[in-house]
Picture 1 (cartoon, helix red, strand yellow):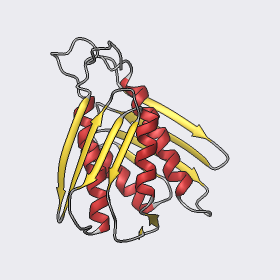
Picture 2 (cartoon, rainbow, N blue to C red):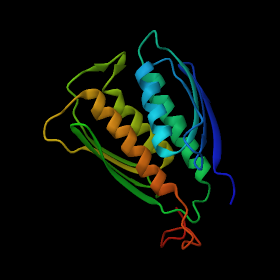
Picture 3 (cartoon, one colour):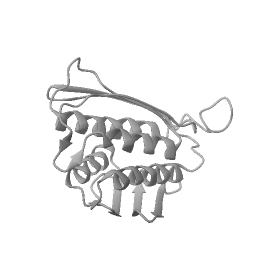
Length: 199
């Protein structure tokens, strides 16, 4: 089987971001540096719990705010995932996870179908966790979905929002586990898992 790795760099007047990913890693090789502490923590959790080897180097206009850095990191990560998947031959395509984290229950469902669609239903009590604006969670995952060309659905199942840190972390971990499931190869699948013959 070919190595399912990718390196993508994106440089604009606002950000300079490089992402390296190995979809068949162990989650033990992680180097994350975005200049945003809580965001680093979330990307680290994503790599660890998805068993992805991941390197993210991001320099952005943090003197303005974190928006460009977080959104552009999502764009580059999504592109790296799509590139590493190649023709998607033999993959399961679908993945889902219902993940608990203390009082929070998070749901993620992924379809690596080649069509971007994003839906998120999550409310957070706090506007910030550390220096991270919680509204950027939606911007990040929307960017990943569009750039990776995947269907991505995220939801916090609780009727009332709980601890904001827990809610965001549960979403990142649920996404990691769902994506790991969707990217796994299955020996029963000899082609692309689609009646169209392509994804």
